[in-house]
Image (cartoon, rainbow, N blue to C red; front, side, top):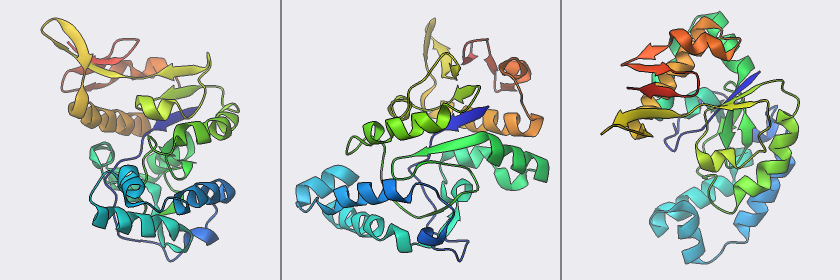
Amino acid sequence: MKFLIPPSEGKSTENTSKTIFKDSSYKMHDSVKIILDNLKSKTLDTDIMSIYGTSLEKSNQFHKINLDVFNGLCSYAIERYTGVVFKNIDWQTFDENSKNYLNKNFYIFSGLFGLVSPFSLIPYYKLKMNVLSLHKFWNERLTKILDQEDLIIDMLPQVHRKAYDSTDRTINIDFFHIKNGKKVNAGHLGKTVKGKLIRYICENKIEKIDDFSNFNYDGFVWDGQCIIKE
């Protein structure tokens, strides 16, 4: 069983390991090199700004960092990402069993690295899944890896879901609330709930989807199909 979760746009620039990425145990270096070759071919200012979605000055900074990613110092993926989901996981407060469960059972999807485990060592980078058709690039590679799993529980946003092919062994978990009598996406609040759910899963060593039944955060519960607040 594997749980699939997204990365966050927010990332720590702090490096907590002395390992550089090219010396890490990451298995798909060749795939990253292909992406970097594609990035190197982007020389027009407009192309670079389109990739990073910010000013030319910041885009060039991110571009330079990405192109030198193999020489970048690393941190665990779980501490590299600093967005709302990860703040609410609050993994540092886990006991050792929960930390081991987290690392064994979760994959984080990444535009640059495909997928990594929470304790995989990765450098600082900036690259979203929705640029350079990265979801298409990763699809065959990630589908092959995930085909080995008997159950996939997918908590990814739509663009990341395109980076692999789901099967009848895949269960999608989405987050909703009721507004004006209609079910709508929980939006930013859903990120907080997702982090709390991941924490609940790790603390309780969840083994099957039915074990979600006791989850409750601020009225958000599992109704058998999604996490929802009535």
